[in-house]
Amino acid sequence: MKMVLSPWFKRGLTLLALAVVIYLFWPLIGEIRQAAHLFLSARWEWFPLILLIQVISYGLLAWLNQLALLPFPGQPLGLGRMAALLTSMAFIEVAIPSAGASGVVLRARLLGKHGYTPEVSTFTLAVETFFLGVVWVGMAVLGIFYLLADGILKRGQLLSLAALGVLAMWSGWQFWRWLNDPLRSREGLLRLVHAWNEARQRWRWLSPLPRWEDAPALQRLEQFQAGLGRLRAVPLWKFFLAAFGRVALDIATLGACFLFFGHPLPPGTLLIGYSLILTTSALAALPGGLGMADLSIPGLFLKLGVDGAVALSAGLTYRLLAFWLVRFVGFFSWQLLEGKS
Image 1 (cartoon, rainbow, N blue to C red):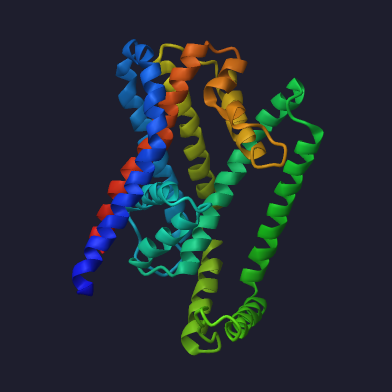
Image 2 (image 1 turned 30 degrees about the vertical axis):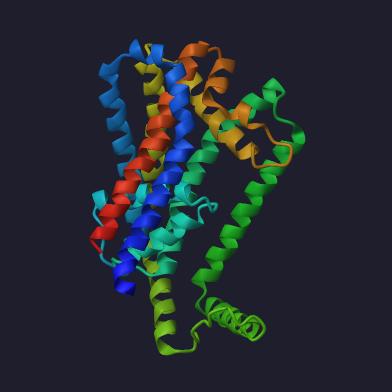
């Protein structure tokens, strides 16, 4: 009976996840209807170019992940399969809101089919986030200066943002040192497993962790640390090139969306607008941060002097292609990757 019900249960969960994404996407349809007259007069010959930019942008993101996985044992993924995995993660993170945890779990599952361990999957995701974060921070500086000059960003918010950045960098550096020290990492893992299994004596519902003193577990740890050593041999410029290319093409997508409606933006306005999107998104997470109304792309570009109707239509197009299209493609990518398991 279990074998009969299991496939239907999985299909039901899959359709439920798709229904959640469609439900979240539905308000955008209403916004597009309100701006329908603007889309009728759009320059549709530019639309294939926007799609092409997005494809290349995701290809660079896939390359960045390939570089991070390169030193670790496992079956290498081609560029297309890696891009499919990333779009699958994008879909599941929207379908199951969990601050990104659902994407981390799906990534570990799909990479596990190729022989990569969960720790490698999680660590390489952190590598991707780090290099993209460096580029994003560089871009966000423009937005910070603009908000300070305009009086929108308060000194307390700036200090909070700086403190979070310093804390994140310090924590990342300490974790990297710990991972690269075989004795400290082994001792730390032994303590973690011991504390977990001690807690299991009180809370019986916790699953026991394996003893890290066992040979297979120690071998797995040694393989991971050997991969960290080989990671240093991968040229650093390749990581930065992939991350910078990914962000640069995302900016190009935004600019092409304005061009799509016959309103090319000056490079300075485009860069400041994109940096404001990054900066205000970060500020929204702070206590007393900016409200969601201030985070809208049309609102930001309207403040930069762009025509309101053009800012609205270009913002909708950018959200549709750079965010929602990737998620819907991710649903089919997920089905494809699971079907080939």
